[in-house]
Amino acid sequence: MDKKEKIEKAAKKKQENLYNPKMLREMIGQGMSANEIMETMKLKHRQTLKQHILKLITDDNKLYEVKGLYLKNSNRPKVNAKLEIKISLEKIDLKDLQLSAGDEFSVHCENDMIILTKV
Image (cartoon, rainbow, N blue to C red; front, side, top):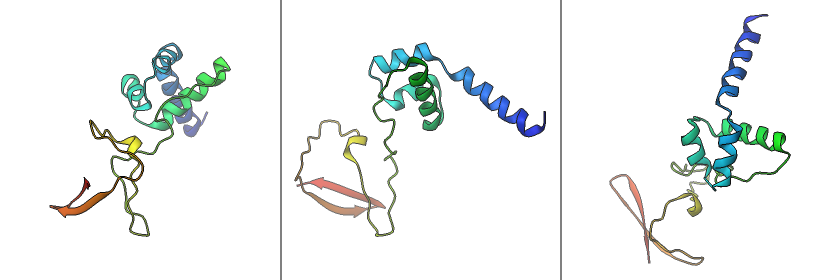
């Protein structure tokens, strides 16, 4: 067995140790979001959670849906090539702010911050 095979085997073994189907089923059943599941299971990468859920789907032959699993992280939106910033409001904790389609905002800058104020 060469060095590459040993590394791959060790990585697979480590991933298997983190995989806990019983706990994962319970958390999905409770309606926990992807971020909550990752925090509880101490997973660092969303891809690892995706792999665990895919394995669970294969083992149980049942489709599981986890809120926020396929959403991009919007905590740090980036400016695109057209100098646009796109923010998905579903990914942000808006607290008590109620928004609906057609709402307008004023935009101003202060101290390296872009501030949106609902009009």
